[in-house]
Length: 361
Image 1 (cartoon, rainbow, N blue to C red):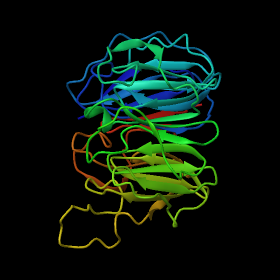
Image 2 (image 1 turned 90 degrees about the vertical axis):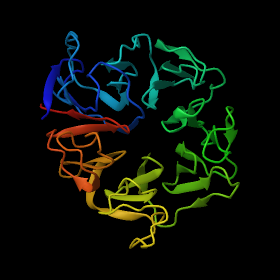
Image 3 (image 1 turned 45 degrees about the vertical axis):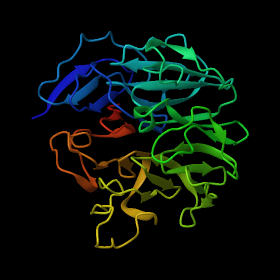
């Protein structure tokens, strides 16, 4: 049973939130990742799909105007959007972001959301506005000390469970630096280090096991984060437009719409029709670390979620609480239609939540 609750919070679109075990404007959920785009349309509303015991807060006033969303991220129990004019608008989060201008990138681990400004500074709000474990939560953005030369920032939701927020930042020149790049399984360091040998990059992700970067020449370069092993280009991946990290797995979209996934597959996050369990005596048909294409073509990509070139939505991966397909709790080891959103134009996803912007125009 799925309850639908209407909001009017983002202009010119319908935003659907596939939520898990929380109200539409209630307690924060983990992790967030994003997908970029720039559609336009007519004024509509935002809808939350949650479990039966979910309830909605008072309806915010409508925002009038064209859509103009450049980027969407899941943020707490709601979502935040970077607008084409460089401002940020949020719903269901309680964030006070009206003063932000000149924003070129958003990042979120679910509990904390950050905006990268055109001047290279980073301003965060939520659980850890300074990206440190002992931060006091704040609904208002504050500048993160030491981050003054940033073009792109990615937060890892797994890292936030252990110590300070784990993140990777790419400089305007393409240099990569990340926190928590040593230690086995947990963060032992809080200061970022430069990733030696990383090619000039546009985006980078670090986890407890492996880090990967999308390079300027549209390749994927990965390194081991705690064994001091040299990085390498993933040879199967060329002409890559998007790269996302999903529960210690990676999916990349090429310029012709193919989606290749590799890495951990304990929850079916590779979308291959089976899961891979550590120690299983049965070898999988293809090793998890070898990229394999999904049986689809995509124009937009988020962790465990795509918009196909024909405009359909596909979801896969962990679904034990309905976080990808809200009318089911069965695992999804291959992409399926969530049957919750039509005509999706933008997508974003976290471990426990997925969002889509629907252009009704």
